[in-house]
Amino acid sequence: ATSATLATITAASTVVATADGGDSLVGDSSPRDGVCDGGSHEPPTTADFIRRLVGDDEDSVAALCAEALQEGCSEPARHQLAKALAAEEPADQALNIGTDEAAQVVAHFCRHHGADTRTSRTMIDVLLLLQPPPSPADLWLCLAALIRRFAPVALLSGAGHALVALCRLFESLLLFHDPEIALLLKRAGVGAEMFCVPWLCTAHATGMADLLTVLHVWDRWLDGGEPLDPVFLGLARLNLCRDELLLCGPVPELAQLLQASLGTKQHATERVVDVALRRAAHLKAVTPLSFLKRLQDALLRPAPDDVAA
Image 1 (cartoon, helix red, strand yellow):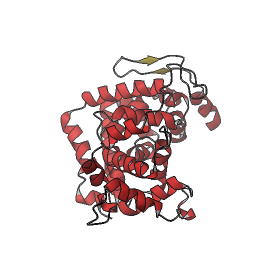
Image 2 (cartoon, helix red, strand yellow):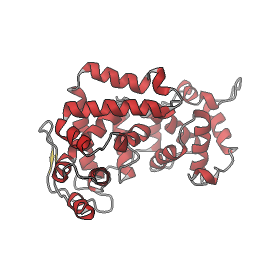
Image 3 (cartoon, helix red, strand yellow):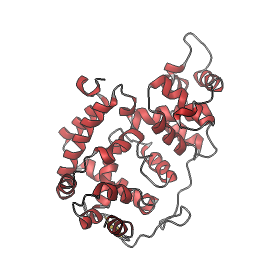
Image 4 (tube, helix red, strand yellow):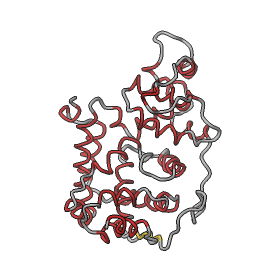
């Protein structure tokens, strides 16, 4: 029964966005070699991506990597960081993040910031798609800037409590915008932790089938994006597969089916993701300001109880 229901979801060839009536994708096929029907964007250039994300002045760079710099050193921050990474020992194989140069960047970053190594590695793998490939120092700076801007909860000490609080807020947000899906997930016993935590900790680098599309999302967020954007993109992605979920009903396998649906190649094409980004902007615009503030406070200024170890 599970495989039959899973086949029903993954074989669905129609994605219809219904919340604001603005976008519809009908008969969208799976991408061929990474190229979607709407055309494929080239990866952003490394220099442009870094300029828009990190900034090109010394003060911006120094502020990002202050924790990793030697006090009293007059050498430019980027040079200090590059030297520190060059001296970094190969990553411990027990971390399961590889042993390449990028793994050394992850190990160094997580040691200084207390971030999770595996989720950080996932984000680094997306950044490695930039062209030309970033230097280790640029990878470190981009990772630091991305997490601070779009996944700040990943840097909290004892982030688990804050994530639980954010998941409860997400369930309330879903109930406000799409009560039918919210009640369906509740009847099936599917809590927001099942799908929301990876979005919050990796800015959607986890759970999307095409990492190049993740890079496209980040590129779209660089100009005017904020920490709330991953929350509303997640809400929009749920909305885009609502018909498939309603077709299945509150079956015991709904959590597995939801993950399978969100993780399909069809839902990772840039065409579908562009629809989701527009939907996310609309959903944020019609969310009460008081609730937006609660979400923002939970992300950036969690209550002491939420971050207690």
